[in-house]
Every structure is written in structure tokens, then in C-alpha cells.
Length: 85
Image 1 (tube, helix red, strand yellow):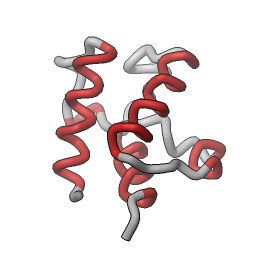
Image 2 (cartoon, helix red, strand yellow):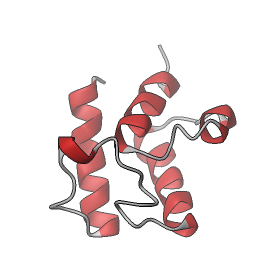
Image 3 (tube, rainbow, N blue to C red):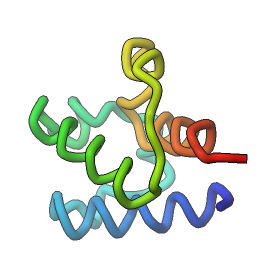
Image 4 (cartoon, rainbow, N blue to C red):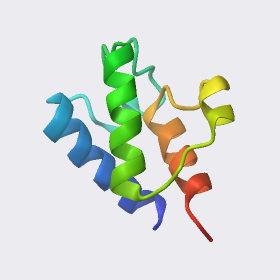
């Protein structure tokens, strides 16, 4: 799965589960989910679970501790790194 496919899947997740459509633009992909997108801790946990299930991956805890799961671009990288080869 390439970056474009991951972004399309994330767009569907953000729209369906978090009602985020207009803000989901490439120019906002480096903005914090907890700031710009107004996610709270429960939203982040739910997003984490959804991403693991939908992409059939396991996300390494180090990626969370390094704040790599707090932007759309960060999530794309985490998903790509977590995919089996």
C-alpha cells in the first residue's frame, strides 16, 4: 500500500468516524490532531484502534512515545513503517 492509498483510507476514517471533511487537506497534514483537528485523548485512542484494525497492523509503542501519531503525515509514516514487508 502506498502513501496515496493510506491517505485515502485516512480520509474515509476521518470523515466517517470523526465528521472531519473540509479540514482534511494536504496543507493541514502537519498540523496537530490535538490542536487543529480538536482531537481529545479518547479520539486519539479510538483512531489508534481503528487504524490498527483497518490496516491490519500493530503500531509500535515507541512511535506513540515519540509523538509520531499526532499529525496526518505522522500517521501515514507510522502506518507505512508498521506494514509487513
